[in-house]
Image 1: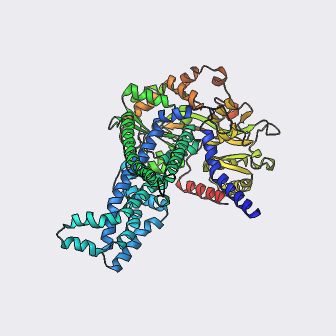
Image 2: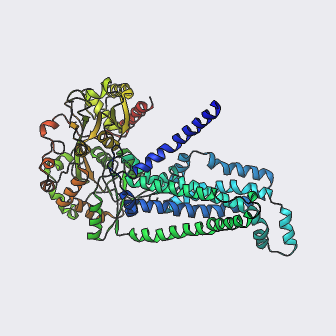
Image 3: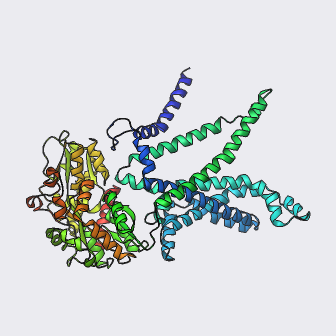
Amino acid sequence: MIKNAAKRFYLILIFILLYSPIVTLMVLSFNSSKTRSKWGGFTGKWYVALFQNQDIMNALYTTLIIALVSALIATIIGTAAAIGIQAMKPKFRTFLMGVTNIPMLNADIVTGISLMLLFIAFHFSLGFKTILLAHITFNIPYVILSVMPKLKQTSKHTYEAALDLGASPVYAFFKVVFPDIMPGVFSGFLLAFTMSLDDFVITHFTKGPGVDTLSTKIYSEVRKGIKPEMYALSTIMFVTVLLLLFLVNITPDKKEASGGKRLKIHRKHRVSRVVFRKVLPTAMVIVIIAGGFFYGSQNRDGGSNQVIVYNWGEYLDPDAITMFEEETGIDVVYEEYETNEIMYPKIQSGAIAYDAVCPSDYMVQRMIENDLLAEIDFDNVPNIKYIDSTYMNQSRQFDPENKYSVPYLFGTVGILYNKTMVDEPIDSWSVLWDEKYKDSILMQDSVRDAFGVTLKYLGYSLNSTDLDELEAAKKLLIEQKPLVQAYVVDQVRDKMIGNEAAIGVIYSGEALYTQVENPDLEYVIPKEGSNLWIDSWVIPKNAKHKENAEKFINFICRPEIAKMNFDYITYSIPNSEGRKLIEDDWMRNSKIAFPDPEDLKNCETFQFLGDENDAIYNQLWREVKSK
């Protein structure tokens, strides 16, 4: 009795652990609030928005078509390779099987980087084709692994007998050998399809701008907060799989049939066989092809009349892109990144020719010094006249002659705190080391921001290259680690809105948004000083559509477009005329968005410190994160 109760309890516990996250996800898909930390009422709008979201549906279609095509090609090549290997002498067969197994045993990240470097070496432009080639490559070994056991079970004497009876080699193969190995071929196809569908790492390294699979799309969304449409998509996928499993399991077992039930069961079995062998595969192909035509028609190939934009996540109003496309006829291929350190290697490698990029101040300086940027023809950017001279002069710290960059947004880094969870008003970085806020502190997952905060707290410059000062900052960051709930980027916004933490290091634009959502939140620039940053538009030297990039930058500099962006992302705009268009007096005069000079007296702008010092910073940051 006790034993049976324990078994039932164990089984229930396993089910709870397995399915509670899925149930949570399904519940969130019906939450009218965008943030997962508060319930805003029941709604089905995210399911409607899902099918209206071109980015997500394109990612879904791309995932399916790559999985299907790569699995088909890999199955053909893998089956042919397996037949060839089986025909070899034992020594060569053993050697080749060992070589074939290496990619399956190899770490995905090694395979992904190797394929990326190979494509770059042969001057392949990263995109849909490189993802497809990569998926075919890593799928072939799985097909070989599935087909080989069936080939070993096949008698070659039957094949030879068919030849002796006058059959051609091809006819004999398809009539004698292929039916025997068909289960292995089909298993190989399903395995390849599943591996391709599930892959993230290799796709991440071999994809180009404007191309996303579900895995890479979900990853990019996680970095900035998952959109509710993703919950809806995941719910649909789970329910679909659940229904398929249910249908499979209710298929009757002919061995258990007896008497008068046999005819009825036979009919049911025949119906289920038709459904699973003909109807479902046909439906899958129709959906993929139809989806391809539909979403392909919505996503025109701009050819030479396009501009490839690489920007921070959630850093531009999507309506502005639509307006630019409609007005100019230029197609915008838009891709996002999370940090300057992720963006820079892509530009430096030259693997992808971006046309317009939006790095931060110190990274602009680094790109100029490494000869990665083209001079902007300001005759094509007349709207630069709307950029306040204060910020053009500030830009000279990293672009001395204002030849390579156009200021886009600016702000500060400060502390956001919850007044109901903090005992007293905050005015110093010291609170980030206060033990009473253990597990309630959020730090920026960025090497320069983390060290900048610590260096300013210690009374040093945030551009320090003194090894003693950097070591002192490193030790302080290591001491802080037990107090930190998480190292985050954009996620600090949702966590602070949802009262998941008391204190967070945040960018001023995010702080402005959080105050609208949660009035208990307060933002402060610490008295020790902080980072005053400027993000600017630049054009890489290898840009293929430079004139289109200049048209795009000129469009973004329009006062009404600058105001649109401020309304959308609440980051401070250096566009003086755009600021005048902000309707809300509180927003237009906000000290968070537009701080007084007195608040900025101890603030500095990040500078590029050279590759050697940059390597030192990165090494020290790795030491902090690894402790």
